[in-house]
Image (cartoon, rainbow, N blue to C red):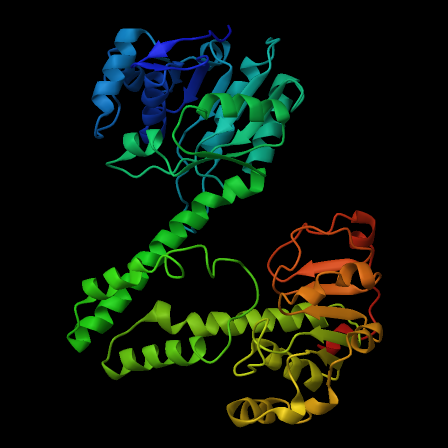
Length: 475
């Protein structure tokens, strides 16, 4: 088998077409098979159901979906689309095998991955006598770690080596029923997780003609994205419904409200606020979200999602305390006290509550914030601090060297520019990063992000044990 140059299909030219097998001819598999054939690729579907195989081989789809009948008929008539029940034939006639079988939920909410692993075993057995490099792409929705297990199964069954004789990539689908053909051919992006340069080349060639960005990323990122996407879509629906229920109780047109909401593309519908990190604070978000919940309660409207936003925010503060205290180090330097960089606003600053908790547990905490002058605090700023940390003037300094040199743990709370070279200036300490100050560093010490990992490239320092000074029962 091989790839041919310069094929033209539906009036479009592609540099080459590929030979593709798709295991599973249900919803995802049928759409993928028909669409790949429409792009000029030669596709062979593989399924245990003889009925589905017969449908494809007669030019008919296995599902009901807009535009799918025309694509299946065209693929059949051109000779680019056919099907078989033989896994060995499917692998032998292709360079890329897509796994698109079902992953049903268990009663407990876990995914049943047995169909995935069964196909992996079939592909592995089919590769035993192959002398060509083969790419396996997992299209089904799977949990993180599935890619690695599929690779292990194929190695066991084939006697081949991953990323030498074959590779496994994660290529999740983001199709909506009713518009799946359009979504396949006009996606917002195409996502491929891989750990093999050869696979990157193959997948780039395969999807190069689609009118979208091809995102090549780590396997784990690709595996979890479907869950993140769909959970967020579910959250949007519930949030919209809860807003609507409050609006109805007040006699307000909720569709007009959400129409205005969606017109803000700078904050509301944008990447802003979508970076994992520390808890929110300031004068507006805590006050207004609390007032909105109270408004709903006053009108006897139950809003479980909106009402639990504050609790989730509190849990992130608790997570920060547990992370910082968990190293068992007595002396802690907090870099930044205001709720975000470039301000002296301490109102509802989440780090204030963290400091309050740590000092209450007996930790020696010193704070650096050049924007906060304790002696000049007035009004609500002063009232908030006096209620939380009345002895703040003993903790805050405007001397960064003094604060950090005496500390074992450095807690970075905002992205002030002067904190950028902290890892270089203060090696050998523990850095707890609450705001993702660094995407990647080479730090001669232990680095810990509150909601991320894998930032420190200095593996020896990162993995070295941190010696505790305090008994864990203290916190």
